Image (cartoon, rainbow over all chains, first blue to last red; front, top):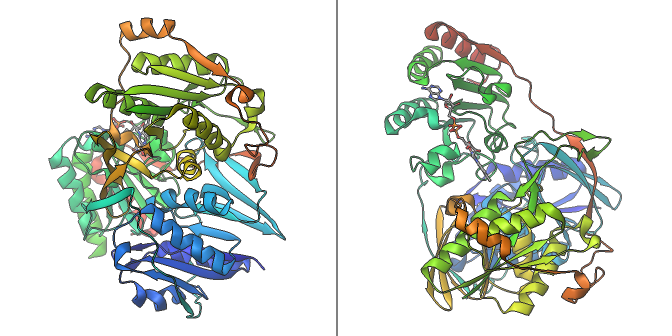
Length: 319
Length: 261
Ligand SMILES: Cc1cc2nc3c(=O)[nH]c(=O)nc-3n(C[C@H](O)[C@H](O)[C@H](O)COP(=O)(O)OP(=O)(O)OC[C@H]3O[C@@H](n4cnc5c(N)ncnc54)[C@H](O)[C@@H]3O)c2cc1C
């Protein structure tokens, strides 16, 4: 029977939704499931981890794991993978997953795949699907090893709210710290903000908002809707938005229910990060802007005029 | 400091890419330097300008397109180039590339390896990290800032899930860089002229002292069996005209048709 180990996605002490999405898929495949959680002060999450759909919870809880460091994180995942005898090891889409998955694969001598959108298991044969070339094509990949380490694309698997697992905690010993790549500090510019990966609605600004005043205008709309607030790279390059707000091939990949692109042209590198959204609204003054090719609803107009009306109209219906 | 950077040619992602019968249609494709490798080259050259460093690039593959991107690397300021050209390399995966770069590294006593964080054709982002595992070197990925502390240490910032992570790394080490780290320079005319005269050290796998089998080439961990067209989204309804009217209409559709408000 296939065994799938999901690496828990924990941010600021909270279990992220992607963990349940991955476990839902694992259970739908009919696999035995386990989760591995790495961090500091996370033991209290074991019930949440079981609720998310895992039947074994490998937990590495140690002060030294407070700040992310790739090498010790890897050791914990490898430890859990060996104990569980995992066939598939899945990470949710995150910078942690992108940094750790190849290391785990190298240490287990397993195949590695980034950004998978589907996985099929037929007896011993694993086959996966993933986008490539900035989403312009899809690849079907046959895995020749018994083990596969993969990062799952944001939004690829849907959470099944009806599932839950059983609590069965296995404590992992604290790994050796990395003495050669020492994490000194983390400058957090996102605490208290809505996580782009979790938000139901994401609103992103592009060069069309021009300056801080434009950003503030759109931020008002985002606040009204408790939406995640993202950006194109042009705004990051201009120093107007933080790098961790960037949506796209280099930045976050998001798949919310509603994505609003305001003053964004729709370069393929931006599209690579948001076309998995359920519904897309674009506001752009150029009727030929490529963003309209992927938008379900398009408003051709000046966003400085449109955004205040959007706020008013939304307030009307939301009361 | 001796710096090694990696250089990959990738299909130009701005052009149309068509798929037929499970394969990409080669006709009409053009190849360019992987954008993140441009950032890696720029990083190496900037380190050289600020500190004393010798910069070498390694490129895997042959043909005019690879020569063209190597010349561009020279023109940007890279000192030396090594090209591994072997017909066996047609179907390579990240661990094969990593195995080759490992061999190049071992023959050159480098202090720092800089790769792009991913390649625009596969978007995999594995080679640099797997390389570090093979070499048992410290590795930091998704780097957005780098500075030399002394001959043996560098300080880097990486964009992580919790924010910007600041690390001190003991050399030798591997870093993979994001495009946020710099704006790659446009080579100046003088650089372009000089780049034409520079020698590229070309060798095949035997010349490098490794065989296809040693690289695991005969038994790849995974294989692409098919390319497919991406499911492209259809353009939906686009409204032009009076801003108040069309915006109210769209909000109504978002609420009552798409049901996302
Ligand atoms: C390797 C690589 C990786 C990249 N990764 C990413 C990535 O992850 N994410 C990303 O976003 N980009 C990425 N890019 C950059 C990408 O190619 C584009 O340059 C970028 O997305 C453009 O941002 P933009 O749409 O905000 O700006 P522009 O392309 O300049 O578009 C601005 C738009 O605003 C509209 N506009 C102007 N004024 C108004 C107004 N008053 N009202 C309404 N509309 C208005 C204009 O019509 C235009 O369409 C990457 C590029 C490379 C080479």
